[in-house]
Image 1 (cartoon, rainbow, N blue to C red):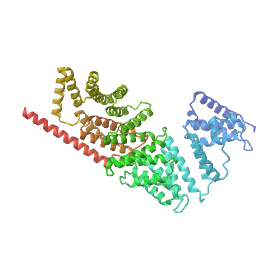
Image 2: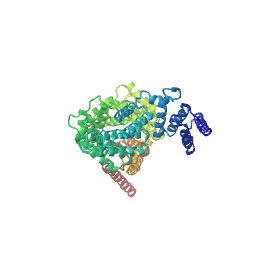
Image 3: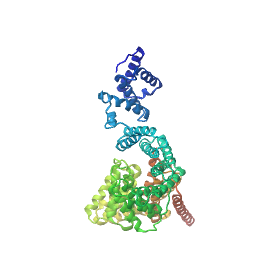
Image 4: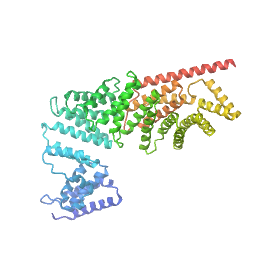
Length: 598
């Protein structure tokens, strides 16, 4: 494909070649994105075209490599550069395969000619389904754009192709988190719905995909308008499908998810999810998500109202366990599922005292901890509490000591904020163990741990036990001082815990979280209320730790601007604050009476 080249042409080719070699040496391709280098590329392209419109293989190879490097330099954000690189490499692959990068060969392998717009659209869908990385997604999007450009404006297939392109762009947003992709996905979805009026065969796909995309944007911006429109579209999708349609289960699931995002506390979402679970085949990829969502909804209803009693809790755990069997360990849905299961088993343990539920709680928490690379130390107090309770419900002494040893090991990995809580669990377990073994070393360690935990009530019990055993006067003196202090404060849990709770509740009032985050907060507030009412200092401390871990800076996803506390959460917060203030007023009145008597 030779043709005559002038001096300037050779210079443009040589200059661009030298720039590319420098990029290959340094690994930094951003220098190719400057206007000067773009101009050099344009000059080389203009001078490379021969009289017959052909281009030499050497020039084509340099230009293809230039566009591929530009595409990678923009972190796979240059669709135009990708399209041009692939077009040029398609020409080079049969004749000079050694110049084609392996990643490009993977994208081009097995790709047939585009042919008609319909064939191109089918090809794009196939590429998208097989895409294993961002390269593949971009390739599918480029092919679908071409198919859409070649589709007549009045073609019956056009709305469906718009909707499919919207799905691909939305999926790319979920990978890259680039907001312009999300905006384009919404625009494509609206266009697909607008071009598919009622009765059009492509309307179902259009309304479903637009609903999902609007809900995704609601999760990012918190826009109630987006959520309301998404819910209406999801409802339309359900209405469009007859009861025996194979996609009806998925449509019901989508609508239920929208209602739950809108904090709908009625039973409507549970009814929809129950019907969806009955319709979707157990081998469908969505089945595990449906069961997990239904399990969470039942658990929340149990926490919020208790109107259905124990039945909701048992049904929730059944659904969540079934979901656990179907959602792979590597799935991003798995951590939330495990955390929900742990809460459910803890709640049922409080009702029944079943060691099987304790074992299950420990199993979920330990998998969560391992999944974090053993870095999420906020889980350690919860794991320690499960081990402590397990030790207390075990008859075999050797097995009980093994549980206590396990909690001791956990304490070594705790940060400063978890040390006191875990020390309290160790002390309580050792105190219980001493009652069966009469081993003074257990009692001595229990006293040490309970002092570190700042646990007045169990510490007094331990000190009096040790005084009875050893007759050491200082144990009795310390116990009396602690009892006198407790009598003066007259409170169910320590002043430090109440102060921490009061400060945390004030912070929570100002938090902004996604709807799923507020569900977790609501559950922990219910546990905290119960702990404060019953004077359970240990459970209250753990609930405070869990709530602190839910703060927006730790759970928020990149770019989110979530919602303030929903009405149900604000009501629960206000009740807790009122109860704490009432306790403080009672303490103050009691302290005043003491002053007068003196």
